[in-house]
Figure 1 (cartoon, rainbow, N blue to C red):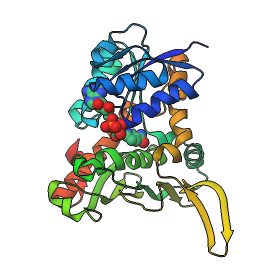
Figure 2: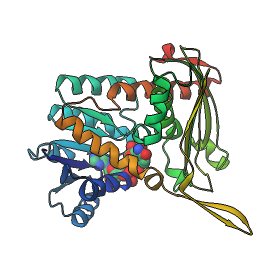
Figure 3: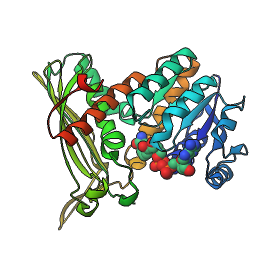
Length: 336
Ligand SMILES: NC(=O)c1ccc[n+]([C@@H]2O[C@H](COP(=O)([O-])OP(=O)(O)OC[C@H]3O[C@@H](n4cnc5c(N)ncnc54)[C@H](O)[C@@H]3O)[C@@H](O)[C@H]2O)c1
């Protein structure tokens, strides 16, 4: 099988993890270049992973003919421009979520990807968790009947630098996973209306500066299903990602806060281990998504999470923000 040469754009926390994955976990890909405007980030990671092509300017990476596909792991606001430039450079694109922060940017990114005939996959890692795929198959095979209630939650263990979190992050970067999962788990249905309750309960002092650290969004779908997406930035017990689909004939549940099925029984009671990092809890999904993307390129297959999926999740995120601002339900047709 052909190997794909990845170039990495953004050598921060997520980029370093993806770079390590390509080098140490994938048998069908190489890492051949790294770009980061903080060149020392690119150089440090390059040294660690044995990659000598490092650049401060991502455009130089895009001009490198050895790069077949890029991994974009930069801050959210830079994604759409990089997707567009990568597509114009005829590179296949794996982009961390969100693909864009406005609908205009999302449309332009999708258009350029189509025009240039490259593949685009979004970092919606839950689609690559085995249980989520099985759960969705059960829904598709009608084994739990018609979806009536869905819920999805993301609870991060800590907020490292709450002062530095850009406004609306909880919707555009955290809950965007849940919005996508709810769409994924309710196939063929469209979200039509949202209502948001949100607050700064962990750091109320930062609410005036735009921080929201706790949120619940209710979403109505056109198949009458009602969904909730919830997030919180400080689950002291560990990283927590769970999803449930309740239908007319039964229910599927996915996700588990425990990091293994080991339970410790002592005179203190029963204890389980949890993780403090998304990259630990969802480790296998992060590897699977990059591996799968290589297969999509090599075998010319449609990625499991596309630009359209990214736009559909973004519309819900933008409507959730509007609902919070106006404190009333918002129809997605008002946004899109
Ligand atoms: N899928 C997931 O579960 C998941 C988890 C965490 C983060 N993310 C996403 O990954 C992205 C990166 O997050 P992070 O935590 O690694 O951030 P980070 O701040 O640790 O790293 C970002 C890196 O990008 C670099 N950078 C900034 N602008 C750039 C540009 N124009 N071109 C190239 N590099 C640039 C920065 O110097 C930094 O090294 C975000 O979009 C975030 O939402 C996804």
